[in-house]
Length: 456
Figure: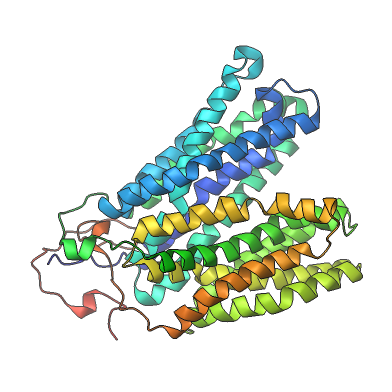
């Protein structure tokens, strides 16, 4: 049997983890912050509402390509190596971002402009279907057992970094140029900045191995995941996605228009919640080094199930900004604890059954179907049917559906880790900067000290 490659050095893995889905969320953040300008320049609209509707319609259709992207890139990750799949997804995510900044507008080429925009968004949706789950799988498979929780949390935090970077650039753009200049030409700048950002990410990811030997079939060919395992993974991801989209995506509008807080208070509280959520993810991932991640996951799901409804009642009955911040802090901590250990949970769940493909499917089905529909469902239920507490019940429903999977994981024996997997590429040592050192022979004897984290 071929000898598995040793883990990458911690510093190289940290760099890869932080940039895991930074490009994806940077692009989505930039497009969202410039949605009004994009609608103005790519569609024949005359009102702000029409511009936003047209722009977000293009944003929504990109989700249609995610299932196909997760299938194709997941298969590539299992058969050619996760590093190969990530190189492809990085290019397919970044290049369309740059090309969007070069597109002609509707006033120049008519309907060809929105058609080209839709095509590029389709390509990005395809890449996004595999970018995040395969990045998580790559980092987890390359890390030692003790590092997996912390590095998995960093993969999750990378998305928050992308959103914050996009928000910062949008703020600078708004401060430096007026609305007329932005609608005329300055909207292109954040997209064109995707070119140097892509170069930086690819340089950071140079430690990823992109070739693959012909390894032993027994080690590298993943078993098909059982339906029970796949449903367990989907239910766990759905619990996080529904909670995240409810508390950090839909909630600002609810706070402003239903709870009657000001716009500045709604946005300030949401920014505070996002920062606390990021810190909670890091804390949860770090804690998994000392406390079994299965205990953290089960405890966080139980606490969320018990606390969400009472917290909603408190918000509905008392109008106080400090109380609002305290409630959002509670939401952020609860879901941050889930998010911090979810990736290492899914890696252990799928490391022998499905691997990249199963992990991609679990995220791709849950994100658009359960998470992406939350704003629409909650807005209709609270605004159209006046069911003020429906969001709390909806969140509780998905937490309850995920509890059996979390409990079975908690009671089941911890699987013997496959560390690290041959499919990620031929063996190579890397220094702290990620540079490859001379390769080690496949015929070299196995030494436990060469594989940190495998020793019991």
